[in-house]
Length: 243
Length: 243
DNA sequence: CGCCCCCTTGAGGAGGGTCAAGTTTTGTGG
DNA sequence: CCACAAAACTTGACCCTCCTCAAGGGGGCG
Image (cartoon, rainbow over the protein chains, first blue to last red):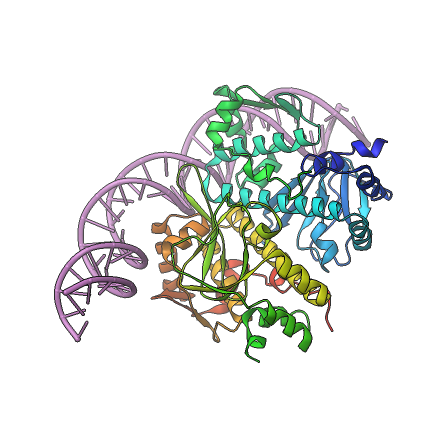
């Protein structure tokens, strides 16, 4: 069955063994497909009674806007990720989500989720695991903004993205496609776009990593890991159910 | 009953109306009291099968350490806050928690929580609200590190703390006791301790706010809100049950 | 063809870091 | 209650990251 190969199934399956009936319940969640176009927000701050989504294809970002008009990107979402999982349980969204590429996503209501959880508690565990991992990524991002300099931040970011994409089968041995502009990287990493450009050039010049024309290539993976102080522990985060 | 006045009951009660039986279930969670001393971590990274706690009195902080030895404080915990709520559902903790003052906290196991939730679903909703608010605070903190300068960051931080303390009855009209050292502020705000000192002096010199000898006093609250671009929306975050 | 977005590079400046030295407050033991 | 040590706070001088401003080039699309 095709949906058993969905990015979400792939991601959850890497940490919790899912039975065929778990997978069946999971694929039921994918019925209401919706499509979104780049640059038109799909969820925005202050909106109430918001749906949540599971990304099937495409990239998106969640962000907040300051009074001054500056933007801080909190996280990027890739296939298999949940969008707005928190806003479905609570009344209003506290952030915006904007597609970066064309996005296909399945819409979920709170009752879809709750009934799926009742049918298979193991799936509930897996979804909680995913939510916990998302939170761990936000915390790691915060640590980077507070205590890493520009080049370490960039290296760490590119490595994290690689690990996430591999998990859903979207990265090859040592490279991946990445539709993010230098402006988006700047807003995610708390830098100016100009400095992002310089940092990328430095990584290239030092033979560590090349990001050009929408593709990231690791020229020296170990060197990059070392520079970034990258430790995958916060991503692997074994699930509570192993069997 | 005394526990009906606990900081946690006070906090949850501000957003979800809790019945007497809800409050009774809640107070059952406070049976196993434990005490911790400053500077000895109560939860640490990598530790498995960790308990969670509800703070009754005292202050603590959650933090991560970089390879280089630098520290980034992710959040502070005050009375009424949960500690390590995530680690109780998942196997290993991804951060450390250290008491700042003497801490009295009630230990909770996963089964304590789940059985309480079964007895009163409204309490489950309230706890989820609290967890969601904690996550919103982490996101707001991330935004500050990425896009606010030092003085805005400090102003925003002091205002957020004030709002949190008021909610549990630990702040007076325009001031509060605060046991945080300038070193801790530095590690939370992504600054050096020296610069924290200068920023505090600037706030004082400009007649906005005075932080001295463990006490924060707002000299010009509105001016500070304006400087910080502070918007309480992410804290108020109305619960899903109003009645 | 022209516009818009994105990338690139240079020059100059500001915010915040580091180092260093001195002062005040807090905590501990006698 | 005092003496002393350890933290915590304060301030100055200097410097480095990263920002801002500015200008130019490439590529995709209506």
